[in-house]
Length: 169
Image (cartoon, rainbow, N blue to C red):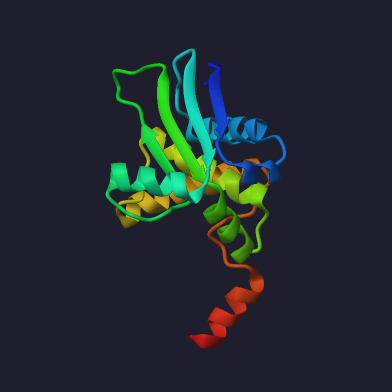
């Protein structure tokens, strides 16, 4: 049965670099809607997700405070406690790390940000990558969601990198 509940995606932009991304609120809503469809989660009416698009300094501080890791990262997800419905949680994405990773992987900022939004949302609804089986399941959900959005498999090496890896082995 398709999920007919609407989700509210509240996007806050806390860093000017995100001006490089056209319509970030629509991007977040589209990515999360696709993740809902492929994960087949049933949402309660009025479900909410908060997204903060920030800089490396902000995410580093959050990572230090909540995960005890004094470093910037690309995405953090903070699931809301079960007692906090309709809020599912918060997704935080850092611009500099995301832009650097996208450039290194020869991906667009839009596609990589979509991937991180999907990844973060899957964490909010209980997926993780703490062991190999869980990681495979989560990555399969990510691939299916991104395919629905017309985005290539983020875990597949580009043809030239795959060829170089084969030559080295």
